Image (cartoon, rainbow, N blue to C red):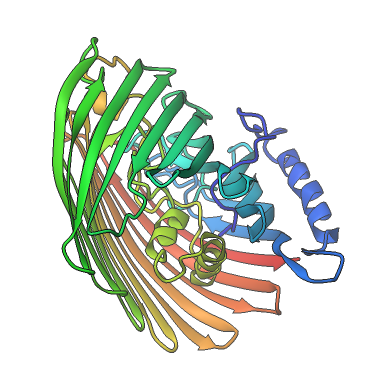
Amino acid sequence: MGMGMRSKTPEVPANGVEGLGRPGTHLGLLGSFAMGALVCVAPSIHAQDGGGAVRGYTLSPRLSSTATLTSDINRQGNGVADGALIVQVSPGLRFSSNSGRLRGFFDYALNGVSYVKSSARDEFQNSLSAALTAEAIDNWAYVDFSSSIAQQAISAFGSQVVDGGLGNGNRAEVWTVSVSPHVRGTLGAIARYNARLTLGATNTRKSSLADATNSSLQLGLGGLDARALLSWSLDGVLQRQAFKEGRHTTNDNVRGTVRLAATDELQLSANAGVDSSNLRGSEQEQRASYGLGLNWTPTERTKLSLQRDHRFFGNGHSVTFEHRMARSIWRFVDSRDVSSDTGQSNGSGQGSNYDMFYALFASQVPDPVLRQSYVLDYLRKAGLNPTAAAVGGFLSSAASVVRRQEASLALTGVRDTVTVLVSRIESRRLDSLSRVQDDLSDSDVVLQNGLSFSLSHRLTPQSSANLTVSQQKTSGALSSQSTTMRSILANWTASLGPRTSVSLGARYVVFKAERNPYNEKALFANLNRQF
């Protein structure tokens, strides 16, 4: 599968690049081959200062090519299979920095997809993941930048796929970008302060359901020593969001928190404040909010966090448990909160395989730059597409209340790695005045359940065999709103050198739904070259 990550560069037009030429001409790949040629001649850059010492940033081009022979590309569910050969060429570029004034990573790939002997149109798919922080003024002013592009299902009840290269009318490319300048410091010997302004936007090809702009202003004050026996903080947030297909909404709150360090391992907290929002009606509504919290860290490897709040939308909560052993990570998350996320799994934060494993390995590899490379290398060896949806989501243009439950386990042996992921996401529309037509306008609840099991066995120091079994199930209020996708993927991956790897594999997918069910069998081969 292609190694392009989810995302985009700001220079690429917001509407993306449509496929060029008639079927069979494959002109849509010319741009990919041109960029690939540049990638091939560009060396990997490790910036050095005048004395020859290596600075903490790298610039690494790559080129990936994939051929997939599939039994059904259009998945019409009419008993007539439309087989095709899919050729994908994906030149990409990765920048990473872990020192100096600029820290973070930027990873972009342009995936050219050509359909041989098929009526499907050739196309380009953008893929990006970026998270950068620039220190503008020493120890005071910073600017955070993040951006992503991913292939996302428009409707959770529509046709789902495991490979973004497959033709699918229910698929859209979602672009997000966010810029956030912020400052932090101290007010003499009295308190510490922070202030953050965030501006963001979402744009979607083939649909306008997720299109929105948003802004927020966060202000905070707190005691100088957050680890003192008794500490305090006062925080305020002003949020604005404008949906292209929905309403302009506000969601503000002011909250004071008192924390008690009962022991070195146990901290208790209580908060009280006011919520002001128009998410439940046409007028701004003010309601009191209050809650209790607990953080327990008995060891460096075990963490438990509990939070229970009464908010304007009802009761919210957050539970996080994590335990690390020498060769395993156990993690459980359960939360209920307001989400204005317009795509990327509707607030789950787990929109792709890359997102899911990036969160899973947070404790094992805490540095975000090193973790990004670690996750990409892990997915490449396991034969998993970083841009493939881990839990199918849907696009929305209104705020929702989302209950998210996720349990994950990763076991690492001398030659074997086992990963198990279980998730359940319940989404309900909060903004009842929105007239946008999406999944939550047709059903008052959308339930998404996911299960994934992966096994990777190292055959030799240079090769491994991998197996992934997964299921995604979605249901709504109506009996017709039900889909189930089951898939089995097996592949062999080997290193042909320090910078070259090859993968051969097969998959079988069964998609059950009232409309357009399908069975797909596919063989694929991938060649990846780092420069």
